[in-house]
Image (tube, rainbow, N blue to C red; front, top):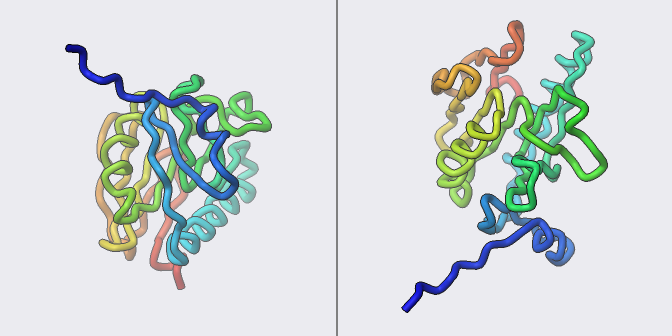
Length: 181
């Protein structure tokens, strides 16, 4: 007797969700998304502003997009994610729907409901899709895991009090504790 076939979803399902309901799709599997809390939103806002200000000050061409922002990671209809922050330097990847392909830098703010996905499934997907740098900011442990995916390594784990060197920019340091003041 054959095993029951697991449902495989596409982006059509994502776009059919009721207004206000958010989910991500990774390799055809749906991951429901809970509404973010206030600290999560403050981190997204302040990190996005810090990165955007750095880019503008240095006449950079990259663009910063906070969630909700559609990323069609594999340029197919089986993977759709909404990273908390996406930094895209290749503008040819951008259209009115979002980003088609891998952003250069992704930041996820971990929560108890997303921890397993952020540290496991997404780390693997982002690495294999060509994301250059991936940060997991964990407000519960007050730590930041920085993955330099171009060099295929975990650069380090930092505390919120540390000055964290951004991998894709030689002269950008971010201190999370300072951003939260």
